[in-house]
Length: 435
Image (cartoon, rainbow, N blue to C red; front, side, top):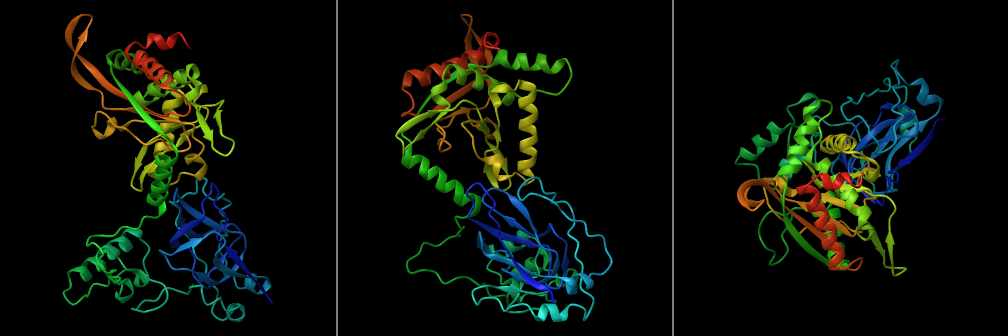
């Protein structure tokens, strides 16, 4: 007799305690190989395919798509043993062999293997009855149902239905095997007989769209709130003439080879400034009542994605030249926009570079990325009137701002750091003295 094994949502690392089921990659009755991804989940930091450590027949799934599960909650049960192995129809196993959260290929189409009719029914029947609190789902139905799974793959379709108060269980999908498509939701939205399904409003609650403060948005909200609660921050800023920096970048890129970004040059200036002012590459240990000055610069940078603003981290940035920094910024940005950043790519930063100039704004007073001690903000670089060598001229001007934890240093240190950064921007030759 096969043994029924329960696979629970594993610890995804970096303090993550929960994940939302985005898409099931297997159904009840499918045969899975060891390390084959069985579900795609979304954590507060990344999209992740979760591989199952057992090989056999799927006897139960726990949780519908869109359900949020805590770490340690059951995901699936698998019948492991001779009966399950004999039921496998000939097909390449294609084990994933991936580490959760580290570069899983989301472009691969999930393959399902079915048990031959009658061959594994006893194994499935022998599976233990799930606890009442669990939601057990089976094969996708092709007609409207009131319980069980909803035949939806796309999170966008789910969001569209949720935004318009449409009950997906009441829809008959027009896609393959009853799959509910965006067109089905749009048709239901236009139909006058479709009554919106909404949760009862609390008494005297304000009207308007309600957006759950969870996932990435929830983590950001908590981290920024903690920063405001714990860190007595202050901001100083200065305008700088970036004309020479832009000319230096153009000269570097004119000789061929990989292009160097403005962000990479600013990052190299930051690492040089942090070498002169190490107080700003630190954190505060409240339990020990100590300031911890850190030996390496793990440089975070803001990257805008469809899921929101994330801050990937370039490790040991102080050891990299502008070309290496530029390549790493490009790589991490591409991975971030694909939703494949590993949790480790988003944590461990010691200083953040925030280029909000890409949004067309001149200045900002950003909130420090807790538990760091400082953040350099960079506004847009644009042509402005500027007194240059005693004469009025049109120059490329940028506003630089430094938000810092006033516990780790005083204004003199913060001002010295920012002035050094501005001097390097205005005259890149200043930087050459430290290289």
